[in-house]
Structures are given as C-alpha cells and as structure tokens.
Amino acid sequence: MAGEPQSDCLFCKIVAGEVPATIVRETETTVAFRDINPQAPTHVLVIPRVHYPDAASLAVGAPTVAADLLREAGEVAAQEKTDAGGYRIVLNTGAGAGQTVFHVHAHVLGGRGLNWPPG
Image 1 (tube, rainbow, N blue to C red):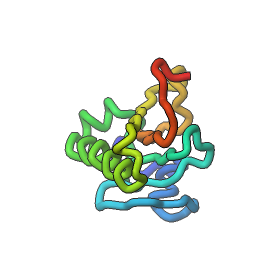
Image 2: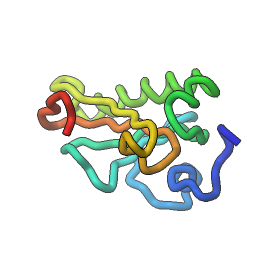
Image 3: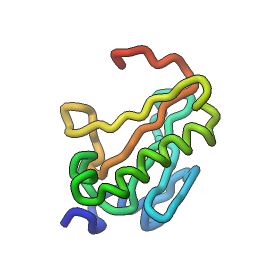
C-alpha cells in the first residue's frame, strides 16, 4: 500500500535504520543521504520517510510531503554550499528514465558544470 513501508525496499530500510547510509539531513518527513555512486561532487538523495514509488504518486497521496521533499532538496544544496553556483534536482520516474529504486527520491547534484541536456 502506498505510504506504508515496503519490506523489500532499500530506501524504506534506510529510513528504518536497517541499512547504513551517510545521512546529511533528517526531518520529520524526509531523510537525505549521500549517493553511493555519485555523479557530481555533490550528489545527495532526498527521500520521504513514507513509501511512494514515484514523484507523481507522492504528489497525489501526500502533497505536503512532496513539498517537504523539494524544500529539503534546497536545504541540502545550501548546506552543501552548491546553491550559489547552481545545482540540479532530478526526480527519475520509471526504469526507462533511470529509476532503479522505486521509492521516490530527489537527486541533488552540484559542484560541477551541469550542462543540459544531461548525459
């Protein structure tokens, strides 16, 4: 069920403290931690504590948590000192877009030039 922890979800296990992660920020509704395969000098994932598979389902099922996720992405950028030079927030949806863990997560990327389109 959406919103409920999933026993087979890596990010639900990180939220529960069952899997270690390098946590950089926590709030009542979100957890932010360093990506284990960084694609930029700053690469932090921000996830909601509740389980939703993607950004659209989070926005429908828990819109205030969706807003918290975006706010925290900005706070992470400021904490990591990438806000002045620019940063990117990426929300992949579906395997075809590169999503590998189906618990919504925002990638906060910065610390190097981020040309568009990505790749």
